[in-house]
Length: 273
Length: 341
Image 1: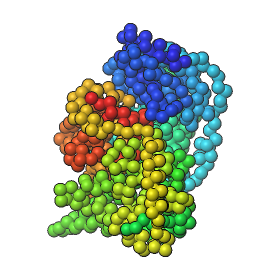
Image 2 (image 1 turned 90 degrees about the vertical axis):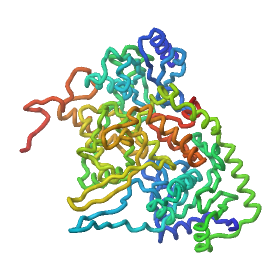
Image 3 (image 1 turned 120 degrees about the horizontal axis):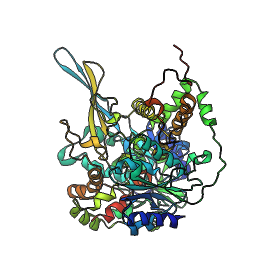
Image 4 (image 1 turned 60 degrees about the vertical axis):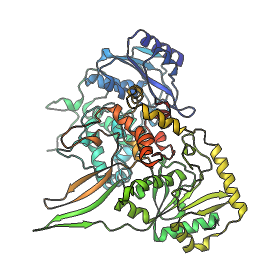
């Protein structure tokens, strides 16, 4: 599988079809990998694919959008690629998608994965198997049942740890704003002081911004250096987007994200006032 | 002071007694995959086996956000209220690379006769009891630095090293002596054989560190590579978050901001800042000399292994490897500086 991937990358670079191939290479310890940018055909042999290839590489695409790039994408990453194409952050013709048949990496999302299909990829490496895994919303449903004060206590404990490194934002494929509200000084939406209250405000606003666009890829949770349970939020958002707007982020490249459009009568929303 | 010996049980009793009257910070479990330095109320909350806590211990002295003062505008004057000095604290169970971080930034916060009040205030109140590392990780490279070792006491007040089922306690500073004298009931005198066993321990641990940087070569290469095309591509995988800088035991950059409570009163705060952030170099007029991500990325490595060496004759790094471990995209500081040319 790796050999096949390397051959595709080598050919794309040699024929100058792309400027970059974004994939994974071996990291500092056995079995670990990290993202790599390759621009020479002879370097294509560096590419690997194994269980440690957790990173969602689509985050890099808007950053190299003036050049053509090929990206190694698992089924779940492909959803993010479709989402950012839909949001006009990259042009489809500037991206070559090398889909890899994935049977799960070392991530919390894989146990309930139903997204390993590679629809829309330009190349597919390996054969996609039906993993037979089912959606499991029990953790969200359990959390929904908590009282407001229990929820608040939980999140206070989580965000007390937050060091506001913004890794969650910077690895997020749909957090591509060049001018984030968190950096704004006039007006100042967020004070620079790091404390539980400000940390929560940051994540609340970020989550509102990615609602109906977040594909629940878990890149933010994987990146968090202090292990904040962000998947509880992203999973809940996916669930709500489906329930309220019958919308699934990253399913296609042409539907409108629910909050970027308006209908007088939304079927999923009951007005109480 | 003569080396001391402390048994497992006595160490437990000592920490419990310390925790009763001081803030004791030690590696503490936050959730299934997070261990950070937190306040412990008893020894049982301490997680002993961990080498690399998720975050750095520096935030126990050099707070991530710190109020410098509060102000209130009165009729004719402005009234300032300074923060009261903090409580006596003990940092227990950190590692030699954590403690060395304090030694490195001490020099910065006391540079050319200037003493940084909030930092040195916290530093004077804090006693650091460090534990030597038996099994260094693949990310460790402390032996690259002058005197660096998994059993090195620089920056620590007391260094504990496991020796024949007990701990050899090297009391290294006045603060350490004060603590050892106050709690002398828990310590016994160590013999020469036990001190020798510590040297053996250090040697064995050092050989387990597989990566050693040639710092002279690194400095030479960085000196001449500022405009090198190397930096055009090496930064590409970096997502420019600040995780590496905020978990680093030696990164010290900060920003000063105000927070208004009303029209007449407010506070001034100091908060860690990161060279990876675009805002870090943005000036009042809107100009930003380091707008692009390549320049920000280059700055971190240049500062640590070139500029700081020029100013302080030592690297701004202790080789803990936390930035490598916590980087969401696995950027390896050792590889970046070694390959720079």
